[in-house]
Each structure stands twice: as C-alpha cells, then as structure tokens.
Length: 348
Image 1: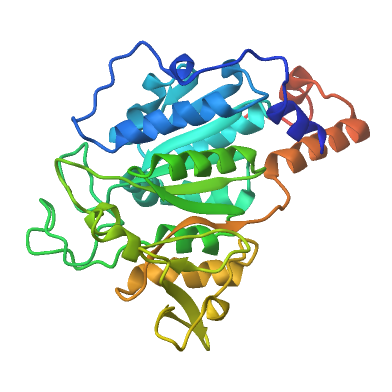
Image 2 (image 1 turned 180 degrees about the vertical axis):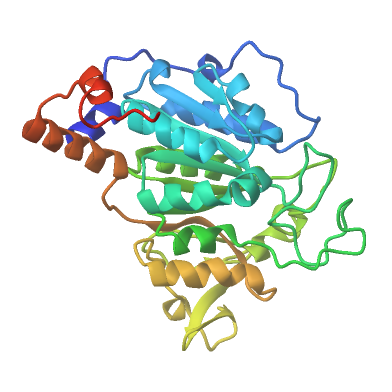
C-alpha cells in the first residue's frame, strides 16, 4: 500500500459514527417522495459503516441541480460549485489535499451536459474521486426539460413534439474514457445502494456510480419497470463477480452468449441450465461494454452492480512523485525569485 493510500484511507483512531452523525442541521428541501432522500440516507448509513476515517477527512463537491444540494445535508466538508464544474473542482480538491476522501454529488444534466468535458477527463486521469450521479433522465431543478439521458421521443417542456436525440449511455461513456470503477444502483434498493457506495469508497481511483433515481414531479415512474413488485424481478440483473448471470422471480432466467450477442434463456425449458449462463467478471472491460449495451434492448434485463473494477495509476500519486523528483533535482524553488528573476520580463 503506497503512502497516499495509507494517509487517505486509514485512521483507526476515529470515533464510532452513526448515520445521524453525518446529517447536518439544515432542513432537507427536496420534493416529498423524491428519490434523492433515499440516496442521502444510504450515503449517511454507508459512511457510518466505514472504519478508519474522520468526518473531517470527507468532502462533498456538487454543481447545480436538485442533487447538488447534497453538501448542505452532509455534516462533512462541502463545496457547492457552479453548473457542470464539480468534477474539475473535485480534481483540484483531491490533488491539493490527497488526505481527503472526495465525493461528487451530481445529476445527469449537470455531469453529462455542461459538465461532460470535465467528467471524461476526470475518468481518464483516474484521480481518487467518487462520483455519485443521480440519473432521473430529466432536468428537475429547472422544471422539466429534456436531459442527456432522456429517452428518444421523450415529450418535455423543451421537446413538446418529442426528443429527436439519442440518449447518452453513462456506463458506456465511462468505459470509453478508461474509468477504473463503474457501477450502477437505484434509489429504491437501499441495501444494494449501500453496498455500491462502500465499494466506491474502497476503490483507489475515480469511481462512477450511476444511481437510477425517480423525479416524482417531472418524470415520475421513469423506472417503474425496475421498481414495481410485479415486474422488477424479470427486468433486473444483479451482477456478482464470479457468479452466473441469472435473474427472474425464481432465478429461472439467465444470460447466455450466442457468439458476440447476449441472449436471455429460460432455465426451465429442459434445454438450458445454469451451466450455460455467462459468468460475471468485473475485471473484463470487454464484458462490461457488452453489459452496458443491455440498455438498448427490450428483451434483456437492466444490469445493476459493478460493471468494471480494476487498478491503474492515479493522477495525484504520479503528480506527487513528479513534484518530489523536481525538488530533488532543482531544490524547493522560490516564488519571489521566479517572479523577479530571468524567467519574467516587462512589456513597455
């Protein structure tokens, strides 16, 4: 374990926390029934389970949107920034103070539209920042316009005749930008969401967690297929590393590869068995891409869980090493000498 990992992740002398210890004294101001309440609760409950970190070592960064109220409601450090810039600010926070456990709370509009450029470069740099993206597939704070993840044909206030754009696939985008940890959960599965939050915390490098979240006012029921008791078992595939991909009410369905094409199979048809099912490998980028494209097919379930988890160099660690190398070669340096020395000039 390198020094920065040890400093930023381990401190066995901190007090024992409960979820209430992470709740600020601010009134939570979201619409009644909003999925954001669940996300907030699961983050607070998850953090209470973390052994080895003080509240003062946690920072939440947000942009603009309903989700971006998040830092006000967490009794940690926080910074409410401007639209789309949370990824950039969080990058600076982590690089300036690697000891902080740095988190981004953002929405599909904030992160993937105006913030898209910052998002992709945070992923490729692999700075140790955890991104929680609340995906309600709508602009909620500005009262119901089409967002980058809204489905094609979506009728909104900004697309009264239906959206003619194809939606962004957040998981595929993160994979394409060499993300090192990519996962998906949803607001109405508290236990699973807590598990994914804890997995994010334990990973070294940028983590991206897409959270399917309901907006009760402007896009209510966007995920009914995956949350209603009558349908959810047949439309959700929970990913478990090293385990066969099975789903359905009685685990009676599975995923099999037909060449390069994934297909759903019936495990009770007398032809197929669990041995035919694809086994999940969260270290395989190729498999993660295949799973990310399940979104485009009505005949396949929606995967929840960890798509990809792998270790690679982190930007802030390599940056610190370069700084130390430069100091060894040229000394500490002097800002006054830099400003008034031969590296500066006057313009008349």
